[in-house]
Image (tube, each protein chain N blue to C red):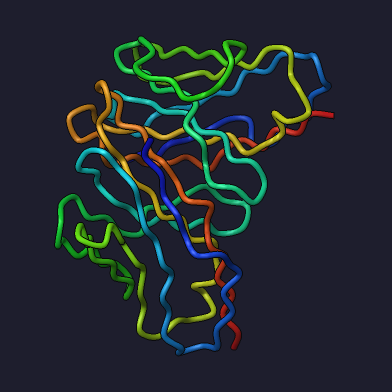
Length: 113
Length: 114
């Protein structure tokens, strides 16, 4: 059974640029959630995708957007990067019907300079 | 809204000491409760969970009991090891409008000395 994978591992961008982060769900999982973890903080919910549609969103501006593909993999896109966007971005996958239990990937460390 | 409060860290213990990390929650519904562990430079690993009141989650010597009357889910381990050094996150998951999102505490760093 393949776990949740994310790419890239690390990324450095300049303020104002755009970034795309990728996530492959654990085999068979149909729901993907994205979280932002600032240094020294707990993860904050960004949004969740189920059947290729956004299925809930946290307190993040519209410049954070996402996609889910038919194979349940997912992308997180962030436009007009700000310094405060520097964080670890975590992807978590789950079965819709057992969605209390989410499995996390290793994360992508984004640094905005 | 829902929230999770954890004790401030860091917690520094000697090997084989008893560990307690306090966690309390506020939720309008009937959440599931979790403890996750994060080792340096890594993502989150599920340590244990409890889905209803009085359930006890356990794994690798760690335990936590879902206490609805005190809205708590304290993490305990009888004898910690150096390898337990990590950051521990308490979290709840509640179904709101069909979205199973997690709400995390701020994390408690544990350092175990040999």
